[in-house]
Length: 145
Image (tube, rainbow, N blue to C red; front, side, top):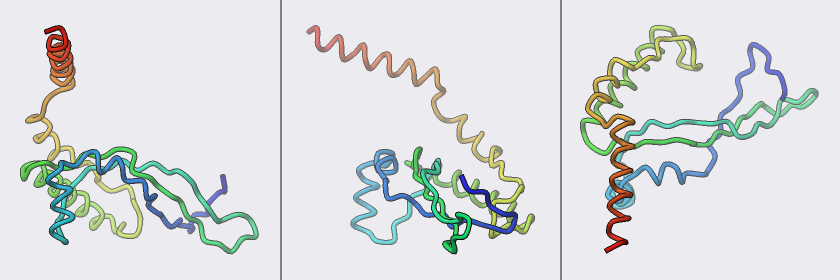
């Protein structure tokens, strides 16, 4: 992997694979995006670097890194969307204070205060496991009938 100098900042390109995003959206959200241009949905995404180009010794090409969305959850109601908007605003305020609009920076990018309250209203991992177990049991019971 090439080494970047302290002043080098690679350009980030988004990979075109969007299946993870599509899978996390409801049918209504996908239809809304198509039928009403300008529709906004809020999501938490996980980006993973997949490849890089440029910045080899003696090469004039600028450094680029390609990232892919490898995890995504889309807000499905107004309460979830508001929590994500609040978290985004909190992170933005941190970048303003740190003066890191052009870089990630070391700023206070911990929106936990906003998301902890939302997470408390959502199912726990144990509740999800129990739900999946009950659903599988219901399927088995129906097959036996």
